[in-house]
Amino acid sequence: MSRIAAISEFGQQIWLDNLSRQLLESGELADWIAKDAVAGVTSNPAIFYNAIRSDAAYQAAIAAMKDAAVDGEKRFEMLVLPDIQRACDLFQPLYAQSQGTAGFVSFEVSPSLADDAAGTFAAAQRLWAEINRPNAMIKIPATNAGLTAISDAIAAGINVNVTLIFSPGQLADVQAAYQRGIERRFAAGLPVDRIHSVASVFISRLDSLLDPKLPAELQGKTAIAMARQAYIDWQNLPALPGNARQQVLLWASTSAKNPAYRDVVYVEQLIGANTVNTVPDPTLLAFRDHGNAAATLALDPAGTAAQLAAIAALGIDLDQVGEELQAAGLKQFAEAFAKLLELVR
Image (cartoon, rainbow, N blue to C red):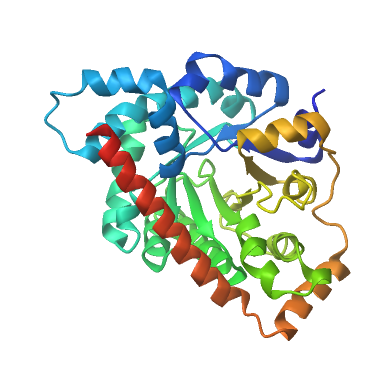
């Protein structure tokens, strides 16, 4: 068993934080699934910008669309939605085998809709219908408008990957939005047993922002402590109506940005049952080479509490920091999306 596949023995799914036509056509994604038990894929505008810029298959497809009288966003979707569908089909056996709890492929609504609840929901409905796969997930950011759209999408039976969560407060708001959507759907007499959602909590960016403000003994520990506390809180969430599933915690941005840290630290230290970690290729390759799989997410609750208390004692408000990080993340995705549309015009 590969080191990556060994993580699944502890009840955690590993998803690949990347997607491109080359990954599909070369068989590389199929290898990740077969050899390393990779159980899903996430994508975002930055991932597709890098893929389209460097993948020769996309260049040929763009050239073939040169006379298509559609705007840049439609060209982008024409280019990549078939790849989302192919990836969904590749994961379909796992989706069926897991009874709809694994094998998901995520695609994000336009970053331009981050403050438009109605527009986000409309986009989620349209993309869900166009992809037309039960194991697709529509990514919606955890903005104030996004929270409304998340509830609407869940009530409409759409699988949702909530992205850009950086703080305990944002996570609690997302979990409440998911619960409202489930309750609305259940009250309407609609099935809730196959709705699946993940709450994507971003990890490494928190340490990158805070570490310069912290004494050495507290550096590199805050993001892991926040995630571990989130897992404790998740296990105490109220039951949902009917046979609805709880929204699953997903760890995102888990490459180590600080070269002084172990390159797989945010994978090794956050392994726990009923969670997901979405990991970029370089970090997965590093884990395949020298990562250690063990149940770590529930370790040292006293140390978790002490770290978070020390951060608070320094006057650092994680919810305020989360707002700053979310704004930066939205800006990054919007810039990548603008470059992406320019690339496909």
